[in-house]
Length: 281
Image (cartoon, rainbow, N blue to C red; front, side, top):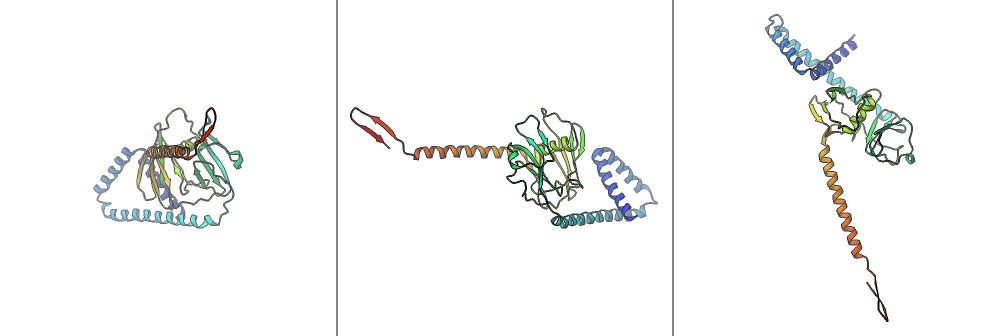
């Protein structure tokens, strides 16, 4: 009985949050009407402090259960055999088909192309996100993050999609995992089975309620980077600009080194005259 009551309270909290995000104006109107009704109702006025305390205690108990569940998961993970890893998702830069998905074990000799997105899933259902295929697929070390977002919504083409980063089948909360436009494009197409036009710009907005119940709003130019006990937001435009500047600096440095090498090498010039052959260094 207590277990069902607890689940009902949890479902009610998430249901209210979902309705608030989908219909904010209607939600504010309903809250305003309920507040006015309670304040005008003389019969219920003596019980308002009690109701407030009950709601506060319910949120507090929910937070305790969430912390306890996270600690239990972290305690159990080291005792689970990691097993071998499987490459489950590849997004190629050169092929016209942007995403290739397979559940077969791929040996290093078969993976030769460059990819925008590499997803590697262990037998413990942890998903590691990389930007290239590692040298050794059988010995990948990773660390599970302690955070869990309360909610994550992606809005694209006037449609709202729930992004589930943790469930019984998959866990994306791995340290250094990056949730960017390439990842969300993969998620919509392969997880939610939503058809997408690869020739059109993939624009969207994200609405995130983090582990501290703080609301964060993002767009396709920003990325979420998972840390051990936190997360960070990066701007892809700035990162690309930095990467381009770094590549230009490396090219210039290589050209300078090449010129220095050419100048340091002895130059041999053979000059022939009528009666002698001279070699100049």
